[in-house]
Image (cartoon, rainbow, N blue to C red; front, side):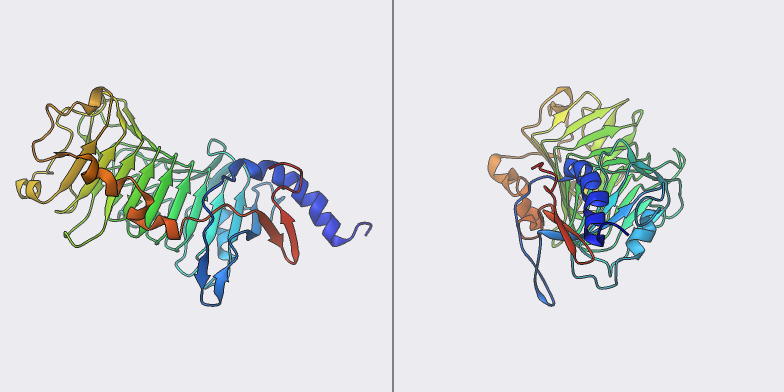
Length: 349
């Protein structure tokens, strides 16, 4: 009654929504993506709103994800309004091209407190390909006495921007696939970035809660033929006590830190062989142009490497994860039904 439906959507939705949502939209290189039906439109996304007060499409994040059709073939942008969401969330493998976005990580929190098997304990599990998360806190509050994954990423082509990932043991199970983490804060004590993905961490803050015997990374590469490994570029390492840069979960574990600030939280030896001396000849643990009190390599284990410019070059580009072909821009238009609204409809750019 009164205004037509399109005007209701515009006034009641776009103006209110887009003022906040522009906060989380960055400018990234435009790419195209192909699906079974041809080239996907990277500029327009179906918008789904999650609001715990009931003023959105769903009150729970999982309900919003469940509403995405199986074998999805269009961009879906799930906007999570500020709040604390006490739920265990999974993005199934048959629901690709989903973005899960808050407005600020400090006020948009997904939290649970599970333990048990490492692959089952995650607060947020991502099995779908072409997933994006922005401006969220993802945490596991189980505590210090067991495996407690906050985020498990087991889908290919996943990217995380400005997220806070918090737990104590096995915080980020960077399981399988190619992944990109930009400006994320990752906190834990024991092997808190682990798994066998091929991942680039750029401008991330790694904070260790270890009092002296914990490791930041536990990469799980099992053979020299696997194109997996963790690269940390332009990152920052801090801690409440001291911690190792990494130890080998797999015999051919591969981890590289470059251009990274290392506080005194990094122990002088840097790396550990996890009690298996045979791994010293097979792991690939490297550092390049790092700085800060923890970056002094004079007391590093002799089987770690100081990488030359040529040696480190492959770890300083998104090519290591094939990112130039799949890292997608933020959508510039959103649609609800047949109504399409530009992201700058309220005059902001």
